[in-house]
Length: 76
Image 1 (spheres, helix red, strand yellow):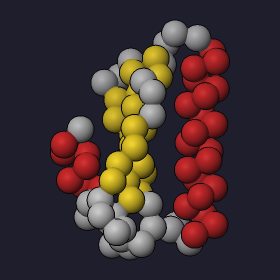
Image 2 (tube, helix red, strand yellow; image 1 turned 45 degrees about the vertical axis):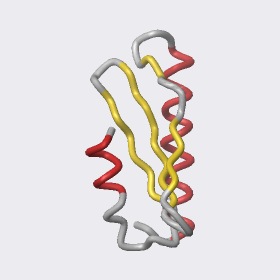
Image 3 (spheres, one colour; image 1 turned 180 degrees about the vertical axis):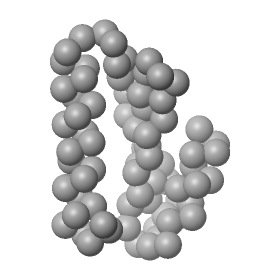
Image 4 (cartoon, one colour; image 1 turned 120 degrees about the horizontal axis):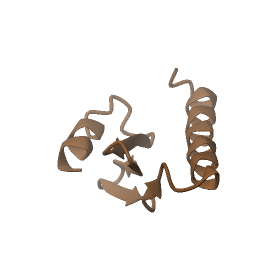
């Protein structure tokens, strides 16, 4: 997690939140970092990828929400 947070701190647009995803292949954890006024991060719960179809659906919903947030702010 420290390496991911360090990478997220390199966000060229510190006024906008930046998102990250950590995985060990089985579990997934999402990170949201806001840099203003002081850096603060939030963590999602741990999602177990191979536990159930609902977990996969939840993961895809989060990725879709992140994608929509990025496209509306012009990040990609």
